Image (cartoon, rainbow, N blue to C red; front, top):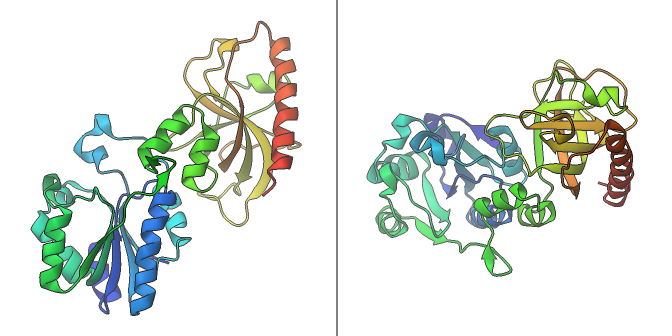
Length: 322
């Protein structure tokens, strides 16, 4: 997949026509995968290039910041997941004030028709576009009939009776319902961040932890203890690379009530690991949720629980080996 970051770069790459799909695609969940698959398959049948048009950040971060959701995927994570769908091209468009003011007519004429050279457009049933969302699917279909491309609307994928949506996955993760969220995603949930200085309390009781600081906009699952796998990037790397080392681990998300903790932390204890992780970028793959976070009467009681958590996490990780 070729990643594009400037609208003007589309003109040469798309000159022979594209099968275009458009969306925020946060999480690149099973519903998104189904929609993109339709676009990719249509491109292959007609000898076109498939193009995913998406955004670096959720539009609400600009348009209505208090209502902007935490993101299931960072731009880098989204690009990596989109590449796995088989799509040929991905435009990762910054959602700027200038872009937000593009009219529906200009979006169709300049972007969809002239730059993307769309021969087929795939979208979901709630798709809107242009300034203030004035563009509708019906208007796009009318425009497509005039310019020679078809618009295909893909109904939302259902999980039981409910549609697979990013909003629902965020809710499930926030409630700690990891297994349900992973079913809708179609894969484990992941986050990454840099290891920062903590208060070293875990080291004092025999369970040293890496205090992970993910990007501010990244969604963090609900408080509790999780069985996870941790990838550790080389000290000079800015992201997880092929040179990363991989470790089974248990991870706590919460406020550490036993120590009257202030502020939410994400702390991972890597099994059978020794070394200094400060400053490293690490990636966390969630495997299973073990228990809620809870206070303990003493450090000794906490230590005993951590031993039980370690045994549970090791067993779960062995059972769910990659």
